[in-house]
Amino acid sequence: MKRWIPPNPVATLLPFLVLVAGCESAPEDAEAAFASTYQSLPSQPTVIRNATILTGTGRRVDGGDVFMQNGLVSAVGEDLSVPDDTLEIDGTGKWVTPGVIDVHSHLGNYPVFAVEATSDGNEITDPNTAQVWAEHSVWTQDPGFITALAGGVTTMQILPGSANLFGGRSVTLKNVPARTVQAMKFPGAPYGLKMACGENPKRVYGGMKDQAPSTRMGNVAGYRAAWIAAREYLDSQEGGGGDAGPTVRDLQLETLAGVLKGEILVHNHCYRGEEMAVMLDLAKEFGYKVGTFHHAVEAYKVADLLAESGTCAAMWADWWGFKLEAFDMVLENIALVDAAGACALIHSDSGISIQRLNQEVAKVMAAANRRGMNITREHAVSWFTLNPAKSLGVDKQTGSLEPGKMADVVLWTGDPFSVYALAEKVFIDGALTWDRNDERYQPQTDFELGLVDQEEALQ
Image 1 (cartoon, helix red, strand yellow):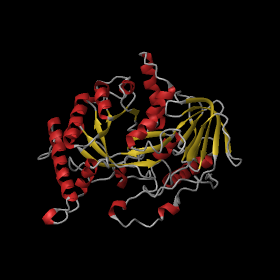
Image 2 (tube, helix red, strand yellow; image 1 turned 90 degrees about the vertical axis):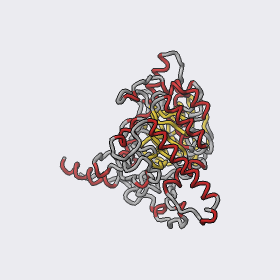
Image 3 (spheres, one colour; image 1 turned 30 degrees about the vertical axis):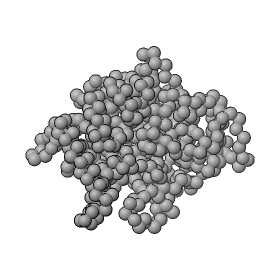
Image 4 (cartoon, one colour; image 1 turned 180 degrees about the vertical axis):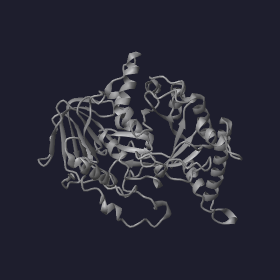
């Protein structure tokens, strides 16, 4: 029998989600051509009472309340006084954290229906494809967005792949079902530029005739040549082109110039410690900042350099050994980078592990504590909440439970560092977007609905 889902703010999202936002008139200026049309879902004042709360800022409140109103966190504390029309949720025996944030996802570009027709993450046509934007490949119907939501993920960055020295622009999304990628775009979030060092670009292009790079030194020469061109382009733009008139628009150099102006954040795929040090020197040469190293298996070797440069490291808990540059891994990597004063965080790079990033952090915490590091839950929670928000440049808006921030909140069935804990309710901007116990708040993509109907018809 075909399942009927009663009307509610989430179940009616597809195929007609965010009609108001989706039908906004297109921006006329080129810079806003792909602007966010995101609008938060309808919400009501809600308070979760008597839960164990980890705010993401190092604070823990036992038997506390979280009050959400008008899409924002209004208050966190004990025995909060709330308006009469507030929906009250009993959190006894349960835990509350900020929404999970993943800074390294390819959902939509490499969706869970992994076939050649949907493989849109790597533009393997040139070592420098800074002109491409990941959002132009995002398939919003990817069911992986929903399974990530069921794991508590409220915000994610979609990145191009790592085949190229410059892979293109990333996009930060709010994890709400939508018809268009613009309706998922995190309002005001800066773009990122995906760069890649090491084995990947030299492997992809090393065997191609008349193509470079084929070595790590070739990688670095390619970066430097691109940044020289970007600086010349930026100077000509800011100078108006001089006697020759305005400079012709160049999409590739436009993205690189955005990095030099500090408007676009660098997200650099890089494994080895000494290579990260080289990339930091490269940034000094051309006057930009490396925002985050991704994967960063050897980040513990250069943790002091990361702290000094203000560079984040997005790491796995225990992925290692699948290629030589990923060999020299330690299970305490995230904790060691954190202990050095650098911005340390978990990431997924996977449609599977994105569903359990809280458990991935728990692995690191356990490994570190076995070494006597005494990592607490109230501290470790920042590795999948506030620190990822910092990496994406949205920590003023989300990533912690503080008054005035977006009410991106997860109610867990128990300790989120336990393998037995599940995300029971997920709120995005204060709107209930996922409820494990209520099918009305378990959205499906429009694409998936047809498959579900066929499967049920066969039963």
